[in-house]
Length: 359
Image 1 (cartoon, rainbow, N blue to C red):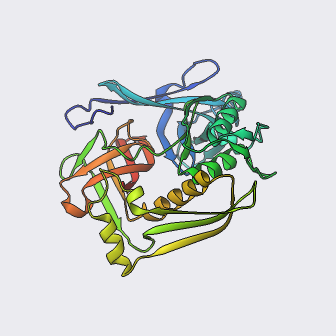
Image 2 (cartoon, rainbow, N blue to C red):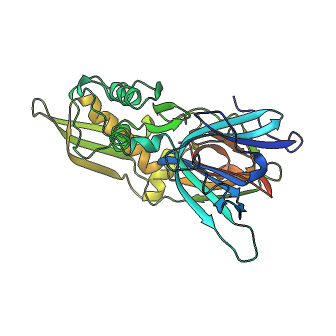
């Protein structure tokens, strides 16, 4: 459970950055700012700005010439509060160095990198694709990449006789493609690979109130892509038989969703809008149904989206539901975090979110 951060609790924002191999920390007074940027659609990123100094005697820079600050080096970043103690962690590798030289000012160095899911974008792991489920494949890829598979969730889909994989499908792209068919999401936290159904069918543990703990909130309502149902017409790759499955709104609407959403979709479209997806090759009727449900949800979750900024809270990360209350009937409700940015700077600690309304 994520306890709410209130203005009266905030005492000491804190972060630490240290090398994974040695557990040696970079001195905090050398770090001028820190950003942790995470997204359910791509690998998470970090940016660390360092004070730079030049030793005229050795003709070397303190950080730019440090062998431990180099592409490929693994860092562990802990961010949150020292008191009351609350923190989250990101583990990732340095990918880029960006020095800055200003006339009359001190040089700087910005260190950028990605979490361990970025490693999956560069690897093609050979795994068993026969008589296995999508979740079995995710666990195998996790182990091949030295990741913890405990975040992999089983789906209702039965094992496939053979799962197709393109020759140029790196591990990350392959997992994302499998996840989209199931309506799942893929991300890495520390060393744990998550391959799971979105946790967007329950109320959040944090409430955001206007004039209280919201610094800014900008929602947007758009009915442009709403549909009532998805019909998938596919061919069974094994016996060449035609398979047809349909997903309707009542199958994706939850108890915490938008009141009267089915009526909203009907009124906004002026009629019943059904979308057909044809030509897919599937292994089972369950797979065709999963594709239909996933596509229907994807087309409707953009109905209400928004951005929110608040005092920093390390528990607010992609894949976490939150509640926005007392903002009127249309925009109050449970939202799902899709992106988050945690920034530590001279201005303190702030968290910025991109969110979508739960259906």
